[in-house]
Image (cartoon, rainbow, N blue to C red; front, side, top):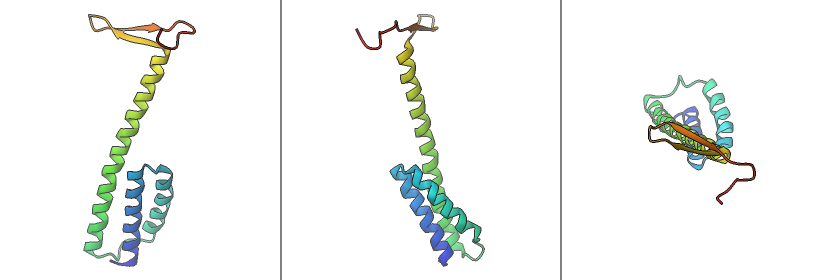
Length: 110
């Protein structure tokens, strides 16, 4: 693999490790490195090098999608917790939502 291909694969592997570790700040810096290496071009890479790059990029894409789903789930959960702080939601026998606000000073179980 040419040096540029090895550099790109190294960046992709580092991004993969950062995704697995949840190091989103590190991913930002690695993305900048990746972009500068891509700007240099990949035209001289052989088919095997391109196949490795494509495979690692695909693995990273799966991790990024999973990270997005996890972050969205966490955001929903935080919103649910905040909603509970403002009152209690239940459902009637007819399936309609019924929201009961907490009285002032009532922020925990009595």
